[in-house]
Amino acid sequence: MNNNFSIPFLISLLLFITACDPADSRLKVRNESQLPIYVTYSSDTILPSDPFCPKGYYLNGKDTITYFNCDDRVDPDSTKTIFIRTFKAWEKFIKNQCKDNKLKVFILSEQVLNEIPWDSIRNNNLYLKRYDLSLDSIIKLHWIITYPMN
Image (cartoon, rainbow, N blue to C red):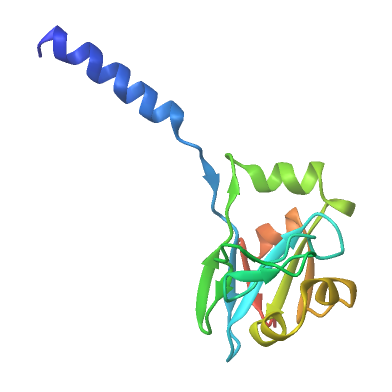
């Protein structure tokens, strides 16, 4: 191999490999219900303050429509991967940030998200289910949270 070609190639390859932002993609949510669901997670027992909705839009506090990318929908009889950035990030997040060392996973209905403002959903706990899961329990579930859980 020509040295003039190999050095730039190796440098490019090294930059490509180190520039990748790894994601922990082990956690999955399986929807065994008959309706689409939406999934979000939190370190606390309340829903996150950042809203999301199935239409990709939400009303912010100023009564103006703001775009929000929503890819947390899980169709019936399907599975969705829940990503978190960096390698082994779920362990770090659960151990270092989660209240009581338990990840809170919220399941919400599409109908509620379409019809009720986010603040009301959040303040009145209008979710279908909240799972409080320790790292050990997630590992025992093989990193797959099933809704509804048997």
